[in-house]
Image (cartoon, rainbow, N blue to C red; front, side, top):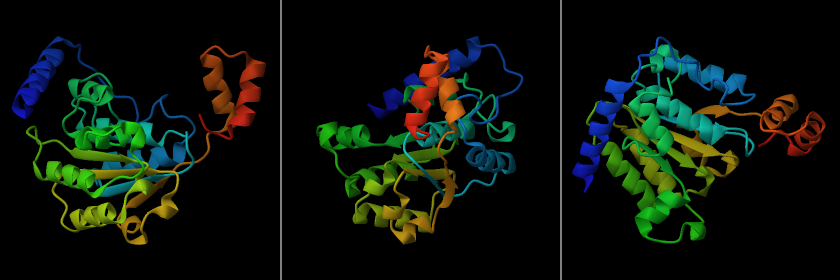
Length: 239
């Protein structure tokens, strides 16, 4: 049940914390994980450094440029125990970071087809929109404060698939947001979101990845330089 799940999480966290070497400094948000997004990463690092985190962020830009990955890295940074907001990025090795990486952190929900299917007991491949019941599930979770006093974060992938009722439910939640709760909306079609919802978020724009960065990425994974350069040109700045 839920209580047993939390108990397992805390036992694992305490064990890992006890047996890991301390870190002296956390790498900056994104590090070598996010390619070619200095503007977006700069804005997010600024938020972490200032401690001023909005109730909702909108990660918008082309497909395949690292928006969802960056959302997870930002979630790690907010709750990281060895790096965290003051360090400008997550350590990537503490129990909290590892739980987010594995998709096991009870305070970080990734709302996508698989998440919705787990609630509705339906086939993930048949999910064509984000339904009101899915958003209500997240909102109810937000109202239960973290047992560790941490941030509760919902990363809504393909946020443009929100049905009107779900978008309205999110808007209502943003009118009186619970403390230390954050929505991150990820989309490559932000124009499909209701204007009222867009206006309640802080937009973080993502750009196509520079072609030389795409080529280096492919070379690092075994492509010959000529092949990597040709594939990068065809990529359109996406991976």
